[in-house]
Image (cartoon, rainbow, N blue to C red; front, side):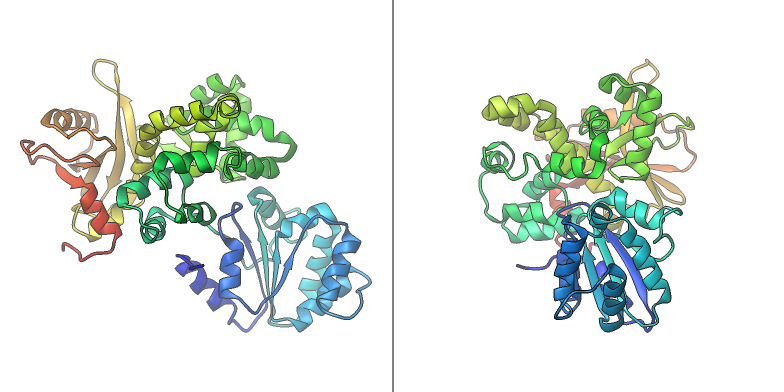
Length: 452
């Protein structure tokens, strides 16, 4: 199986393991993100332990047999021997020690503080909240012991497209699948066996044996524990949209104070939700929230949000997803453009490199609402970007409507209007906006020759 992306992670881990002093490194990231694959790729000779939730005595016996002919009397003896005799040690799903015996963390802390060697101890976990608690909570034994706390992130679109194009997918198909599966390597590998779009979605999400139908629930129930119903209510209310706190409260039927508490934890503790700031707004409460993960955004709207239909009539659920998928892809398309503005600049498609990126929304003169999909702030210019994921040809009327929206941005810097469209531009449209097509984007993401 080919190893994709992770160049920065690979370089960093390789460099750290060559240092001449001991290093404790915590690595965390959601399930299926490829943490174990990364570690085994970079550190194939490391002493590797998988921490499951068996009893403490059973786990200690199993781990002991990996090192000696016999058994260590206690965890302190095990850690002292292990860290004195092995140069690189990995504990996978490290947070599970909290279910085996929480005192193990204190034992490890004592042994680590007294250790005099150049051992590299890598502690890896899939429960983001728990891993942060173990290493970043000042009341915990291992607080301050890790030299580095590394989050393994999903692939960005560029890396996902490299993978999917090798499987035979077009650029347009890759955008669609990235909006559904995100940059989770495990999920992307399901696409290696290429089928028609509708058929593949059914296989992955709606069939009796669909591997991703329950995946969202499995991930988040384990992450949130017994409090998962409250978090699920918030995430279901957000769905695949950017929503204000008041909207989330209305849809979840929870009090604003309760919603605020859950949102704070989802943003800062679990890293599942992110804030979307309204650039140039000036209003402190003019903030929206969105689910960060593409797969979870799709799952909450098209699986969890209609689970009764999914279970009773999967073909009807599939039909609903296909009929509404274009809007979902369009929202992801905006975020692909956001994370790719630097590449568009390098390829000469936009006139400046943004130092800050966001969105803008508000009310027009007649009281209706408007939205600028992407704002890119440069030193002397502001990029105003409209992202069009539609099959309808872009007309002069579309351009004029966008230019009208741009008048609501009150800025002294020069405003550069840009339309990025899946559909072609009508030949009669004026040149008073920068026009970028899907073909242009394909050139950028394929790494072809720069235009500048």
